[in-house]
Length: 470
Ligand code: GDP
Image (cartoon, rainbow, N blue to C red; front, top):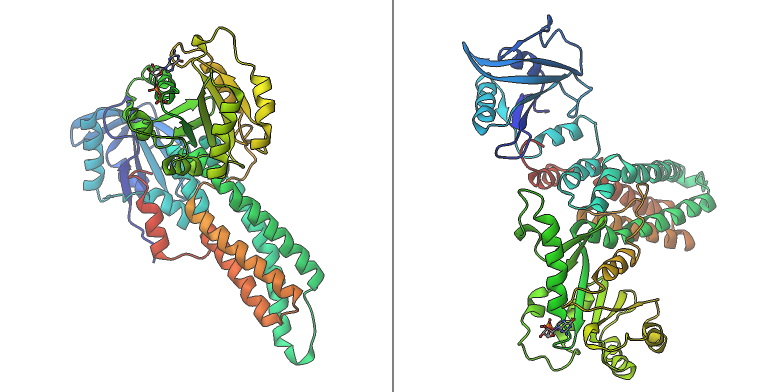
């Protein structure tokens, strides 16, 4: 049975701000708040006011005024949760926030559990599960690109795609299952050619969306970058320069600390994350060549590889170093940027174009060669521009459906496999009842994504990760 209690929580971050917002949701939350609120200037009480009104007034406890507040009311179903909902904007003092919350609890509301407002929004059909999860992503998005992706998902781009495929498939399942009722008569209601076209479309679409997970994950957690190269070429110097530039930018924003963004930098809309930097920083470690397992591991985890070398190295030496790397691990499919450091020690600049041409056989994709001086901070801006332009991370448009959530990826991947089995089944003229099983399986996984098929356990896992007030 649906939980009909009135829930309340502070929706703004813990601590003191200019204002704070306290949310109350559930049938009766307007009249509950009314008992603590005296409007000023308005002739109407909260209950008499229209949905989406904001009333100015005071919250009192008996004769004592606690604070001057603004109360926004949302009548069901036109609210975030789909239920009657009240938002009280008060001054940001922690004492005021707690006093108001306590008054609400004393009036009969109970403290909301983590994510409970969003859970109710889901249960009341205001959003599907993938949209609810996107709310969490949107709130925690730390770069412009991750915000765009989360917003697109919250607005239902991904859900819509799944829903459209689901409906069309459902249509076919009904026909195939109908055939089973007439199994004696050997009829075919579901046109197999049409069905095959649809399933091919599903396989392609699911494959594409599942593949976007790598990109989505990179956007959400930072695009993984490995800085590799022989000892003493200046890797840690470069890393410090990059991170310190970020520190300078970030420390201008009050309240931000360096710790939380350790080894990540924001460039333009994107967040980049440097892999395994502890290793880079231990510069006195004995490393004989770049062909060590750790380097390979870094490369494997990276989307972008910054291969650093001394600018005084001859093209042949570079070719040897890079060749070793390419032999030891698969660098194709990664964005490769060759960084020639210590430009300040050279009399003339390296011929990057010639070097590029010489090395072009080593990497199938185009790659950049750039000269810098990490110590003199020369060429750093150009390097950042190259990072920003690299790979398919640029130009993420608001329309792209990009998966950022591991749960969705898993369900997509499984539905992709099941859809491929339908195709195989169609090719080998599998009987309708077996086809229908694979089709049902695809539908089930779709349902797991959108929440059509769900269990308390799945819901519990998802909403536990929200914070209270969401
Ligand atoms: P790593 O072993 O690759 O991490 O190299 P480090 O960053 O520790 O640098 C090795 C040495 O090269 C240090 O003495 C740095 O000061 C020096 N170094 C790094 N970058 C430059 C540069 O751009 N120009 C010059 N002249 N020296 C540099």
